[in-house]
Amino acid sequence: MSAPQQPADVPVIAIDGPSGTGKGTIAGALARRLGWHLLDSGALYRCLGLAAERSGIDLDDGDALGALAARTTVRFDGERVLLDGEDVGDEIRTAEAGPRASRVAVHPQVRDALLSWQRAAARPPGLIADGRDMGSTVFPDAALKIYLDASPEERAKRRYKQLIDKGIDANLHDLVKTLRERDALDRGRRHSPLTVAEGAFVIDSTALPIDQVLECVIDAVRRALPAIDVGTRDVSPH
Ligand code: DC
Image 1 (cartoon, rainbow, N blue to C red):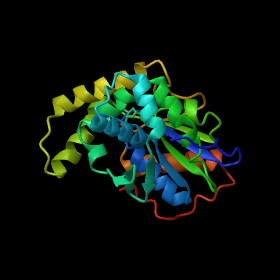
Image 2 (image 1 turned 180 degrees about the horizontal axis):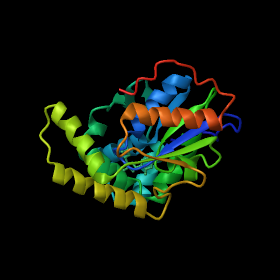
Image 3 (image 1 turned 90 degrees about the vertical axis):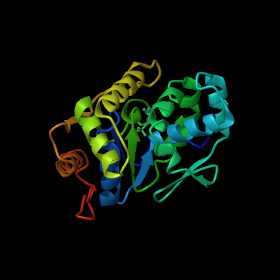
């Protein structure tokens, strides 16, 4: 996954935060609204976790995972995520895929291998970058940094509802526990931990419906990037 560095003149909006805050939904809606590119960095770690599992690579073996990252290709094609050419959209969204990605993501060899690839996603007219370390490490010069938060209980409730709506059996208590464990791993790792980047605008979405969160984000874009036309293009976050 190697690629050149990011062009300096492309504006980036970094959206970071723990899992289940609606980051992906907000990032997608904002990218459509602005007509900008979208980087779902979590999907890269999810793909790498899947590739590791398929190759039988130990999730604690940072060197082997770093080498795997360097020879793996991930491509986004609309809604599709292609791992070495294969659409793995469903496999990277299973219950195991998130925690597995989180384990893969602790290794500096992996993060280094993915860094220039992520920076190269910044192409004109602009990039919305969704992840954990977009504002702190990958795009420290981002024009706007947003940190989206919500309580673990609320995030687990949203996840519970999504699963039940899909007809998938779920246990709220287990979901809270899994989310807390993933938060601890993402916040506690030594390299590029999940943190509020300097200068980030923090939005707590615990009590906010998703369309109001999007409005807050758009207000922040208007203030930070007054020259950008935020328009009225499709903003539906659903
Ligand atoms: O955003 P997500 O749930 O798809 O991310 C899955 C995992 O990938 C997350 O728990 C930690 C890791 N990740 C990361 O370490 N850095 C990122 N920029 C994005 C994701």
